[in-house]
Image (tube, rainbow, N blue to C red; front, side):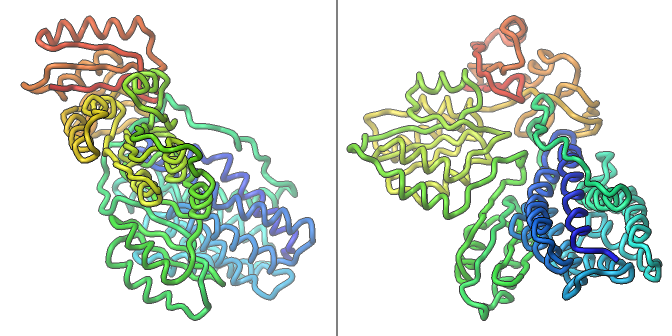
Length: 547
């Protein structure tokens, strides 16, 4: 028999095992640079289940209570498609454990089928070769053992079948095969099962050893565009205003404007996850059902280890508490920056508020709104300096009490150029147009670090290669940082280029930057070359070509 205490420890062990391997899962979504955060999402999703299980151990809950609390906590904390599906796998297990103090091997075997069926039903268009496949095939394997009396035997077979299924996922999804990885979500589910099995076999939980592990920033980089149909991964919780609200009508409405939709109605909450180009429309329709919590909107084309977006209640709180006490200034400029050199340059150009952030740490709408309120100005100009931050800036604009102009800069070099178009004497319309014009006149590139073997844009890339990136994707790969920087410059210059500005990052010495300057002066004799310290992480060089 499996008791509530045992299942609670199995959940804790599973959560620890998943958290210990979150960076492994993150890097499985790389083509050849990180574009996903499956490990982060699944770890954050199951962390609530772990907390619920720990509380259950304090009160000696039965297995029904443990399963229900763990499933609900995972649903409330679910992030990303993988996190939502994980919550439904645990919900399926909870369904089979309903109204039981303990369960036998037969019921435990049925838990896997219930988990798979619940997860599949939550996804509008299930894709094979994912966590769904791994869950289904492991469930099918244990159906044959339903007459066994040993719960451990059931779980051993589930783990074995899950790993076999996982290793087959590249044959079902060509992108996995091309990248040389298995499905990250499927791997996450096998880690959950393995963590559970560890407890049954050893009587102790997996020790949490990597809870504070952080990504090696040298190995993180901008993602080349994948075949993404809809840009924004949008998810939130709805607290229903009444039990009678029509959730099916809501599902039918938003299904027409996105894909990867998961809408799960559970007790008094509805968990929503959808990929869409119109998150605002999704949210407007959701508000008809009830109040929203834990809103998260990510730009999937540049998604990478994002900072958790503060929920709507916190944003509202910031808005109420950050009231200006002095008469507002005529204008203020806010810029997002990653790197002390960049920040110093922008302050010298007139930026009044710097928000720390960038590719690996996107500030939330709440962070930007706080900066707007702190700036205390009649008109505020925002330089997001990253594609993944523009939407958060637009959201902050909608909540701000002053006039806000979001200048859609996608890099710090663009932001610096935009500042050159600003005039304190001009009105907001003229300044916005001038700043946008200056930013659009910049062609940008960067140099960073590849994390695995791959092929992109016809370029063969080896792990640890230096890669050059432009808006067109990866344009060069090799071993020498400066050689790749020169190649990037060749890709972004044109007949109108007059100035090349190179910002070197915190990994580059001044001597190395000076050698690049010499090479560029030799290569581009008709251009003005400027080398400046940016101090940015991740990117060895950021480069701007201007007229």
